[in-house]
Image (cartoon, rainbow, N blue to C red):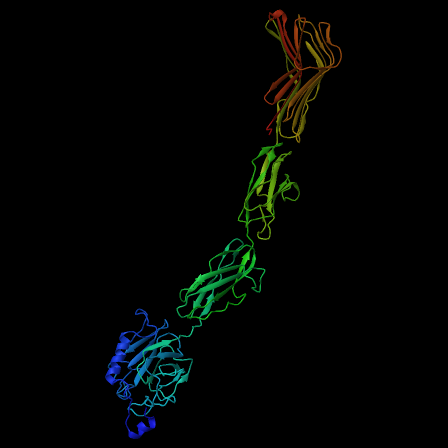
Amino acid sequence: MISQRLRRGFGARLHPQRRPSRRAAVAALAALVAAGLATSAAPASAANNPSPPFHECPAVGNAHGCAVLLVFQADGSVSVLSDPSSGNPYDGSDDTEVGVLNDAGVAIPDVTLTSNTDIFGFDGDGICSGEFSGTPAGCPFDTTEYAGPGVSYSGINANKTAGVVTFADSCTGNTAASCTASAGLDAGASAFFSLEENLTGASIVIPKASPAISSTTPSPGTAVGGSISDSALLANGRVPDGTLTFDLYGPADPTCQTPISVLTAPVDGNAAYSSGGVTATAPGTYRWTVSYGGDANNNPVAATACGSETVTVTKASPTLGTTPSASVPVGGTVSDTANLAGSYAGTGNVVFSLYAPGDTDCQNALYQHSDPASGDGAYSSGNVQVTAPGTYDWVATYSGDANNDSAVSGCGKETVRVTPQTLTGRAYGLSASTSALGLQLLTVNPTPDTGAIATTAAETVAPPCVVTLSGLITSSNVCAKLTTSQSPAQSIAQASIDSTKIGLPGVPVISVGAIQSQSSSTCAAEAGNTTIAYLSVGGVVVIAKPTVIAPNTKISVLGVSLILNEQIAGPGTLTVNAVHVKINALGLDLVNADVVLASSTSDIENCP
């Protein structure tokens, strides 16, 4: 090979015979591009391939543009484009101008070139050698005199068939005398250089992009049991894929040491991504961090700062829906039911308190029952017997727990009316109706008489006793009384006579000593009794001393019929007549008499 100095001395360039002719070189280059010999050919849909002529190269020697244009694509491939009409080789033999256009979207520091000929066998006739017209301004740009602005060569193998073209600077235009230092050929920028032969392959390594998690948006606060989430916006990546990782730290981990949940989202480009929901199982402050794992084209992004994304979770606020029992009479049972709703697996207790009538501020519970809570559902107070009338108040209280606030139904919100028993009765001392041969001889209306009483109060009705009755029927100290009481409810009727004599025409004389009747009623039962101190008919002694008489004792003496301790029961009522005299002389209605001595009637209503 003739040295550069020798060639310059003769004023002409000599080339070894092994090199192809200009026409052959152009044809080979065209065939190279047509065959798509780039190391990584870009897909047609993704590549940005301009049409010739390629003005990224200056007009030097025979050339008026680039013979080959290398287009760096965003997917990391290199498109090798040819312009057979560029006038290359610029030296008329083999030296070729190569242009570069960076459409990768990031700065490219270098490109690796390969060939089956010694494309890096620089012999002094580069574009900056000064041997050709159109020498670029600012030449030389390196010691080989083949480089364009900001271009240098390195990593050339022993056969000069492969090497690295490095873009140490980014330059604008193709005649710039100087460049601004950068990390490589900027996105959108172009460069040019020359080679000794035609290249047969090119590859680039696109530096990884450095994406950023530009913003994060945690979900709003919620109550325990609710769902919390996070979202993150991944930006500045180069067609990023891979995974975003969302780490959630619980309230007990303020320095984000051990996540309680790790969620991932597959990445498909620069976009916003969501973690998906996580159920918050305890109240407090939760903390999210987000990181990106990177991929072949993108560096990873470290986790966002602990505490930069917080979600406040409050206790659940359950409610108590209550249903007190219906109104009942005294002696009945009352109860309450509470439905716990909206808790988060509520524990603790539901406490039922019952307050008596008059305790309108619910200060002193007369009954309490605690029902262990186990989540939402219905809870019961159990039955409570009430012994006094009035309006009772239930109050249901949920105690709450670590995850749930307490809840209370409130005083005066759950009332149960307890109605008293209706206490009724009547007592009178004596009544009589007598006739002879159809003529009315005597009529004695009930006397003394309490009258028919119906009350819900505790009281005593006692008309004045009648000291003396005279006539066909004589009596002394005739009395009647009705007494009612509540808690417990009871009605007691009493009647008494010290002495009585019944003397009717044609009828044996009836003599009665001291008598007393009593009828009592409670919600449980009715009871009656009669005592008679003395009884005789026509001189025949029937009872000689005070005696407790069996119910409904019937006797007949000398044509006189008597019922002693007559007890007449009805629904919830009992009438007790100490002596009931019935006379029908000889059965011929000559003399008729119906006499009742000491009558007592009791009754009670509205029992449970």
